[in-house]
Image (cartoon, rainbow, N blue to C red; front, side):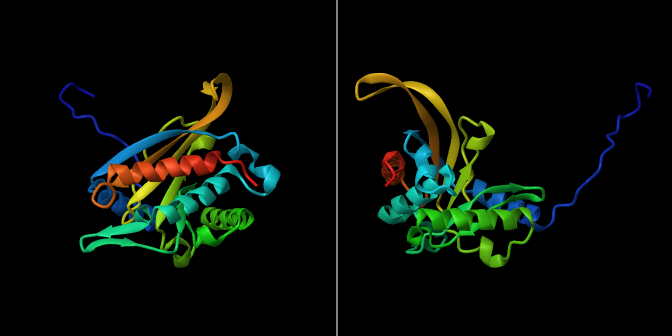
Length: 225
């Protein structure tokens, strides 16, 4: 190549279609929302005992259960925003962000607030398996009222998730790390995770988000029965 020749790049283009195309459109809408973020550190000691209560359950299932309870007490975050207004819902349908070979998808577990820990675990496994097998139907990805994105298993210490519009909030769950902290006045090692709530400021103010996040922290740290 001479100095006057313009270099060219050789590559291949994969057209956006299906889930990836829909996700791209969602991201454009999401970035238009005036979002803010709140983060809290949570002691995961009790949450990590979930398998002793329900052998088929995971920490994600415990988070789903606690989130549903916190949303029942704070319905302003179990809502959708449109130009017409904010709609809150009695049904708590929580989406789970799942990475698959064909892109990110968010299958929904419906009626989480009415499910036992065991039922949540069963439904979570079912929708994730269908997502990865590309067998999700419209009912599986519809009517979500809140979303959880958990990257803890990938060693991510902190991240901000993008709101799944028209929902008004999303919870990002980072990895659990051993930290040297004071508990009841005594220093000790504890498993700590950061939970970050992203809120649409058009529907949720800082106080609402903080109250929800503090209640979620309390619930996750409560011993399992």
